[in-house]
Length: 167
Ligand code: AR6
Image 1: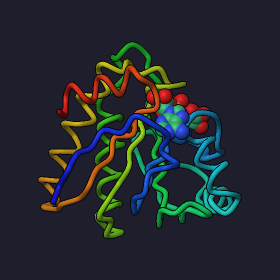
Image 2: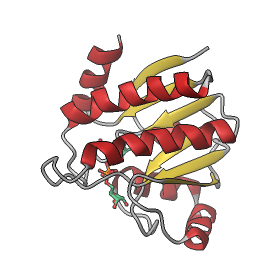
Image 3: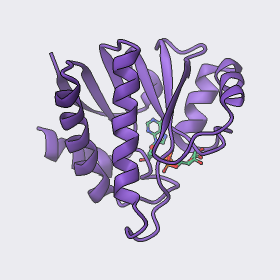
Image 4: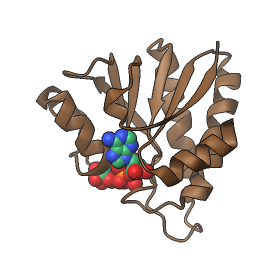
């Protein structure tokens, strides 16, 4: 059954089939959730990222999960916030859509999302949260699939926003 859950915590600790990473175009790793996933998952994930080489903004690619418990990591690249007039919303929506498409293709029963673009990329949290929830709900319906979705909020502000919108 499809269930949307809000977790206030670290995405590394979530038991699920696939974890989504908020990556960059070069898939080179970085800070934030990207750094945490590569650190916990070990070098195997980075080796696969290097082979893939590039991911356009709004797209998603998949690798194994290295030492993590999950089966796979989906790396998606959110938009950098430029004020909202550069197609940021469409690109962020596309991140969630492509991630769900890949998760369905790889037969995941459970999927954990971080709050894509709301850290270093500065997408306003109060705009990103409703977009993420709406897109995920619509995409699951469109794909005719049931999946357990975890919205993993690292910071208190996002956790509050998501809880208000979902509960
Ligand atoms: N678990 C869950 N969420 C986390 C974690 C964690 N361990 N750590 C941070 N967050 P960011 P972006 C939250 O900056 O904005 C990287 O360097 C954080 O509170 O990780 O998409 C990449 O390499 C925030 O709400 O990703 C890119 O260069 C959210 O994750 C760039 O940052 C996203 O923050 C991508 O920027």
